[in-house]
Amino acid sequence: MASERMAEGPDGDRPEFGTGDHPEPRNPEPRSPDPRSPEPRTPEPRVPESRIPEPRIPDPRPLDAIDRDILQILHTDGRASIRSVAERVHVSRANAYARINRLIDDGVIRGFGARINHERAGQGASAYITLKIVQNTWRTVREHLRALPGASHIALVSGDFDVLLLVHTPDNRALRELVLTRLQSIPEVLSTRTLLVFEEDDMEPEN
Image: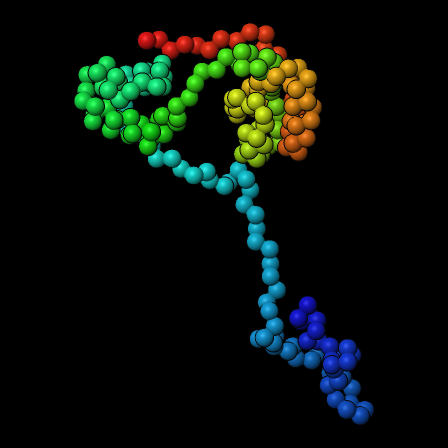
């Protein structure tokens, strides 16, 4: 340390405060630190994960009946054209286009996708997996779960466990590998429980 080096003489011995028979002062005056010496760096305190704010999404603007009709149409058919939507909700195409863009900007519409039959797509083994995790590690665990192959839905819940995960895998062997190798290797995961899905059916939106 700089203070320790300053307390030593040029040859590594303590400096002399006098010559001859003069004794060394018992309480020498402290030397001022050398301005050229770098100040000791102290580690910055780490903010607990639970106190790190997530990026805030602006509050959505209020929805009216036309907005809700547009959402219902797009939920049923995400490929519906602007013209078709406008005709069905009885507004101009420009108005429908502006409303859909506003719903996207406000985060009401998160994207457009397809409803998949996982079994016909080669993912014949599905399971809900419950996880107990270390307290205040949800965000870290969520990032690990998002990287899992076949992860379809992730939720932080209350009750006897902390996280509910839905996965789709090609077969039971792949499911076993995912649970025993991938999930249980996450340091923040304390325990898991696997619930096999025998049959599933997506709720079709009403027209």
